[in-house]
Image (cartoon, rainbow, N blue to C red):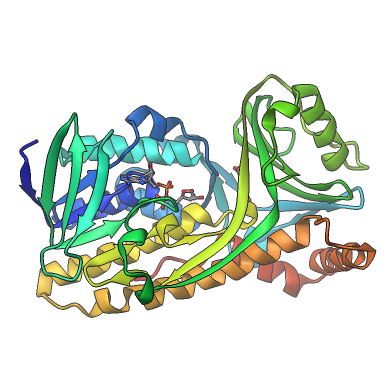
Amino acid sequence: MSPSLRTQVGIVGAGPAGLMLGQLLHLYGIDSVILEKRSRQYVVERVRAGVLEQGTVDLMHEVGVGERLAREGLRHDGIYLAFGGTRHRIDMAELTGGRAITIYGQNEVVHDLIEARLTTGRPLHFDVDDVSVHDLDSRSPSIRFRKDGVEHEIACDVIAGCDGFHGITRAAIPAARLRLYERTYPYGWLGILAEAPPSSDELVYSLHDSGFALFSMRSPQVTRLYLQCAPDEDVSRWSDDRIWAELRTRLATDDGWRPNEGPIFQKGVTGMRSFVVEPMRFERLFLAGDAAHIVPPTGAKGLNLAMADVYRLATALAEFYRSGREHLMDVYSERALQRTWRAQHFSWWMTSMLHRSDSDNAFDHRRQLAELEYLVSSRAAMTSLAESYTGTPFDA
Ligand code: APR
Ligand code: PHB
């Protein structure tokens, strides 16, 4: 790398948002540089969610990275809601005219996008330090960073902040220009991966007196499971035996169904938060993905929202470079926020319906059950859930 560089779009962060944006821009013939503070191995091995909406699956195919997804992704037409000892299936495909979801780990998405980026020969730098953004309100904003002890500066036309919730780009916007909306939840998820063939073909979201549990999967050999826990839960207090006992208690249903068990090879705790920043743009800096919004994982929307953002952003930048028109850049934030707030509501709703909180009383528990009873008995209510869960097509 030379100490002084130029590109069209400087992208901070090589998560799904930054990498997909880079791939879309490449296909439009637009230059970009992607800067990532972590190592390639860290980014690829980081375990995250794994539910892809049809829009995300279609986008992966459109940008030429769908081959392994088509082979290894698991298409699910429905999900189960379990409560009171019974599993109820919601046939999402039947209710939505054929829309479904695909199970494919976010880390696999990231793996495939990195491979694609390397094939293009366009720059993607891991392990960069001290990334900072400058002159955001000028026509030539820049990014400074250090790589292997050497300082660099890249002059850009536009900067894309794809650096997640804890990144530096959102923080570089003057506070007076932003509005923040936030809710934290009094619980977290303890997630595990186990070498055990999934005992159900579809996900099971369960509400039990002891709290929420979720049955998911990664492959025909690997089950992914989550338990509601304290937000700051100490994983070391959870032996494998304790985890399985709690999962059996919360998931097993009266028809004899229960998750298959096997060696646990990954454990982690995630906090739960809803967060939105408005607007998702400051002058020549555009925010996308977790840098702009966080949803609790119950609705499985995080990755899909990030993909919808960068699809919209790439289209706006393509218009800018093709014609000089800034119209789509100007409406980017407003339109991306529409989709974001819809997903915020859905994720909050799924979360509050399915978790037990210390501040809830017996009334709240009965109310939750009444809502679930209605949901699984009304076609209108099931259709509403299915529509939001499978997601609407990405529009730009
Ligand atoms: N400089 C460079 N890179 C940074 C910096 C920085 N200062 N700070 C953070 N990053 C990197 C992170 O290491 C990470 O790889 O930015 C990337 C952001 O990626 P994600 O957190 O995965 O966010 P995003 O691409 O928006 O994807 C959203 O991720 O958290 C999940 O549920 C969420 O599925 C959703 C998806
Ligand atoms: C997952 O498989 O990791 C997963 C599935 C559904 C969710 C969240 C996470 O709602």
